[in-house]
Every structure is written in structure tokens, then in C-alpha cells.
Amino acid sequence: MLTEGILLLHDNARPHTAAQTRALLDSFGWEVLNHPLYSPDLATSDFHLFLHLKHHLCVNNYNDDEDVKTAVTSWLLEQAASFFEEGIQNLVVRYDKCLNKLGSFVEK
Image (cartoon, rainbow, N blue to C red; front, top):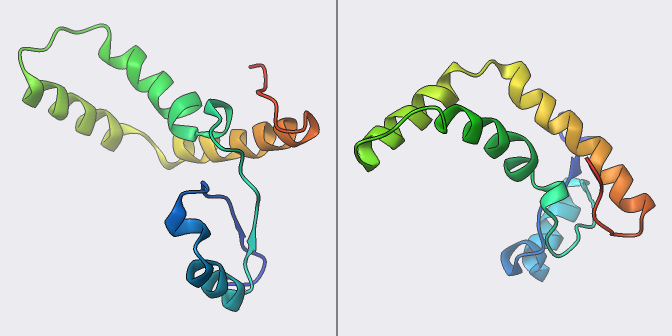
């Protein structure tokens, strides 16, 4: 079955923690990992995606918002699947470090 062995890490926003959502996830048999309130250490967008995107964007000047949107879209489409996989794999390591420090932020 494709849903066996699924580990889900999502934030603790109200829709994610609602009884109806928890019951649905339980019915799937998914294990939901506890997530700290907010940690930039555990947000792949913060520690992986935006870090690289910021370096890409800072070398150019843009005339307007549309130029920025085009540059961001192009950059995202140019990234190989391995780029996104690396971010997820780094999340596993960071999550483990955070748990071992009892929720404290982790060093890079």
C-alpha cells in the first residue's frame, strides 16, 4: 500500500491540528511528527531554497516586479530534482539535531 510508512512533518497551524484533520491522518495510518512553533532551522524554504535563490537574485538589478517574478520562476524551473531532494534530506538531519537539543535552534 502506498500510504504505509509515511512520516508527515507540517506546522502546527490550526487547520493542521484540528480534530478532523488529525482523525483523517490517523485513518491513513500516517505518523505525524511534532513540529516546534516556528524554527527557521526546520523550514526548508528558509535554510535551503531562499538561501540559494537570494544568492541568484542579488547579482542582478530588476526594473520591476514582473522582472523579479520572471527571474524567480526561471530559476525554480532550472533546478534539478536533486536540488529539492537535498533540501529535504538536510531537513531530516536538522530535525534530528533539533530533537536532540529538545527544540532548540541548530547551528549550521
